[in-house]
Structure formats: C-alpha cells, structure tokens
Image 1: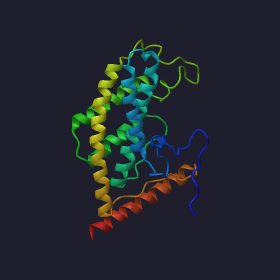
Image 2: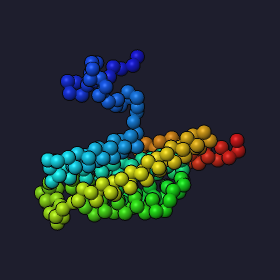
Image 3: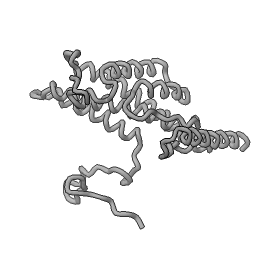
Length: 232
C-alpha cells in the first residue's frame, strides 16, 4: 500500500485554476537529486538578478539572497560532481559534509577526468570557488549579519557590484550545464556497461573503524564489479 502524500495549509497543492503553480517535489516526479537542487538555486540567482534591475528595487538587501543562492548553487553542484562521477569511477568518493567549497572542489576537480572538459572551464570554476571561499568560507556570511560568536559579517567589504556577480554567474552556469550533459552521459554509459557503482551511504555508526571497514567493503565490491565486466 502506497502511503498518502503529506500536506498542510502552507505546503500543499491546489486543484483549481492555480494548479499550474503546483511544483512537484519529493517522490512526486522524483526523487530529485543534487543537480536538481543546484539548478533551482542557479535559477533563483538568475531571477533575483533580473529583479535587482527593476526601478525601485533595493539592491542593498537583495544582494544577500543573490549571493547566498549563487554560493549554494555552486556548493550543491560540486557535491553533484563528486556523487555522480564517484559512482562512474567506482571510488566511493564522498563529498565533505557541511558547507566547505574548496575542499570539495579539489575532489571534484580530480573526478572531472572521467569526462571531456576544457581546462579553461575548470580554471573558471576554481576561480569562482576561491572568490566565494574568501568572502564566505562557512556558507553563513550571506545568511546572517553576524556569526554565532557575534562577529559582524562583511565588515571589511564595502560593496558588491551585482553586474560583476551576474557576469561570473552567467559564465559559470554555461560551464555547469555543459558538464551536466557530459556527466549524465558518463553515468548512463557506465550503467549500460554494468560498471556503475551504487551510491555510497555512510553507516549510521559514528565509530571511525566501523566506517572505514564499511568503505573498504564497498570499494572491494565495486572492484569486483569492474573486473567481472572485463570478461563479459
């Protein structure tokens, strides 16, 4: 028996002439993955940048959701690269939990060898990651005016030009879309060959030794999978 979908008075669909605004979520058309979420934040960035150009828009407050959305889109996209290309490579490579960009980007950059990509595109992505990391290493700078220790955010940064943000956003999103097509192709190809590793899931046990053994077993299974397919 399939469980009924949940809803409340705020988060629900409508069955009237406004139903065209019902957004599908969860298992309704999904499940949706890291790329879908990343795409949503990229799209949110684009739309907010458009709104910022409307006469009367208060860009001094719009700057925060614009930069937050852009940063979060980049964060999710990097995690998407690691999750999907880690399966293609069979490495079980996992992105670091939390909001780190640079550490995860270093993992993602190595995995990009699984797809054809231009060196200048990777250089552009890395450049943007480093710019963001310098201003917002924790993912909190554009969410709150202060840190949890009550240190003021952005006190040393006098202004952010939204045209500059848009320029980098536009170039980066073109690269992201191009890589997404190539990553999907690599995943499909590995699935057809029988070499696509299942998603790696960390064990709930917090014990480091248990986690290490769990990961080694996962890698051994995937090595066996790839070896067996060599003799098909």
